Amino acid sequence: AQSVTQPDIHITVSEGASLELRCNYSYGATPYLFWYVQSPGQGLQLLLKYFSGDTLVQGIKGFEAEFKRSQSSFNLRKPSVHWSDAAEYFCAVGPSRAAGNKLTFGGGTRVLVKP
Amino acid sequence: GAVVSQHPSWVICKSGTSVKIECRSLDFQATTMFWYRQFPKQSLMLMATSNEGSKATYEQGVEKDKFLINHASLTLSTLTVTSAHPEDSSFYICSARDLTDLYGYTFGSGTRLTVV
Image 1 (cartoon, chains in turn yellow, blue):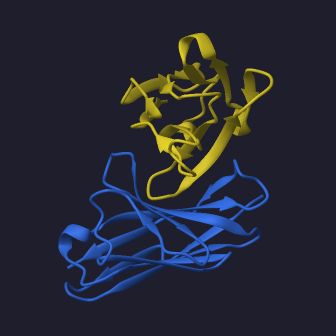
Image 2 (cartoon, chains in turn yellow, blue; image 1 turned 120 degrees about the vertical axis):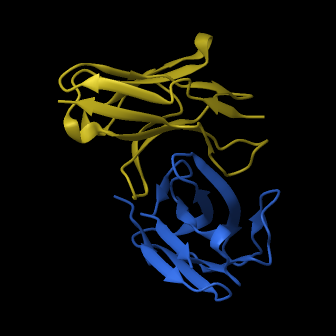
Image 3 (tube, chains in turn green, brown; image 1 turned 180 degrees about the vertical axis):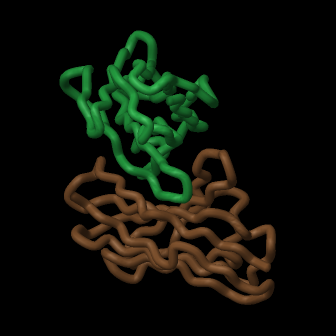
């Protein structure tokens, strides 16, 4: 069965500092991986996705993620955080033959940005 | 880009009444739509998957008769919370999968339901 683990529930970072959010997945084949961001009271916005090709994926808002098959990881990074990056971030995997069309989400990481 | 409109964004209803939430894909056709429930400070919990013209597939533990899902067209799915109770109060989010981009999952902005 596919699953996603985001080990960090909360991360606090100073504005201008770098950010890395961890994501580990379990998947039967070549994974389809996603990072979404959710602002309070809002839906989810896609930051980036990966399913083949270059393992370093560029997304919106200056985010990037690197797929590492050997570590079953898909960590999200941003070199310099802005106050507007304070939000909840979700890693997801899917779809698959076993799980069908649905995405499986991690528990999320809440990012707080200090001025 | 792909846009999903979810309406209403918030609703307050009395116990025992029913509430309908709409999810529309505005600029693409959706083969599949998904309904999630999200509790405060938690991840999304998938409630059901619906395909246009067929019955929804509900996740284990989700009451089919309480959460009615209709997917009548390739651009519209509705979730009706029947005989709502305070414990149904939550944030509900829909997602639509693009017919032409099978890895394109677009989310609505969510509906905050409060049952009083």
